[in-house]
Length: 301
Image (cartoon, rainbow, N blue to C red; front, side, top):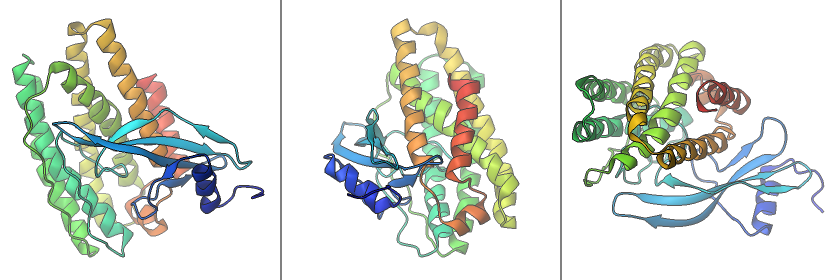
């Protein structure tokens, strides 16, 4: 009846007809992304749950081909308030918040980036405390502290850019939660560090090279250097922990990285505002997915 599926509304209608609750189109970015080859990928909601440490949304990527074929992927959990891939590391206990409505997409993006950069200070201070608890060397602990100091500067820089475009970054709220088990720490490191922060470091380098706005380009040069070091710390922690893990634990880490990569693929399939992409140097969906492919071949395979 619909013929070729070449509009987001048609793809969303097919997902709805297949029994899925399509995520609100008011999210930033939108929940419907154009695939680099053909068709659309839609993030559908499957419910909301929470534990004593974090609120979560269950989501599933659903691919709608141009011919109308509906393909469902494995569902995953995302932390409440997380949309888009911004530089920084999400701490456990991060509460939901988004930048207030801003007509300028550049302001909204950098306001949300500034919030996550500020929240990352909490993440690295918690990391240092938990590394000390489980006997990690002073080199890893010191690197975590240095990373927290980097994130203070990143928050200041991205806040300044957000304000320039008329957006006020929300202050991050992080719940005070108990220290986690070593397994929980490493699973979080696999997702937040070995996948998301590793990709955001590569993304920052792309922005440092491609951003048309001079202030953004200059800011991303330093952020890219720092985020690369933070990603390296994540992999150093992964290597430090490896001899302490059972094969079951290693399998769980691999699965956590695999699911985190699926989440990133769904997020990167969403096109951004054209002016934001050009001035901030953010890649198109096709380029973003190519960057993910390169990292998967080098690091995550």
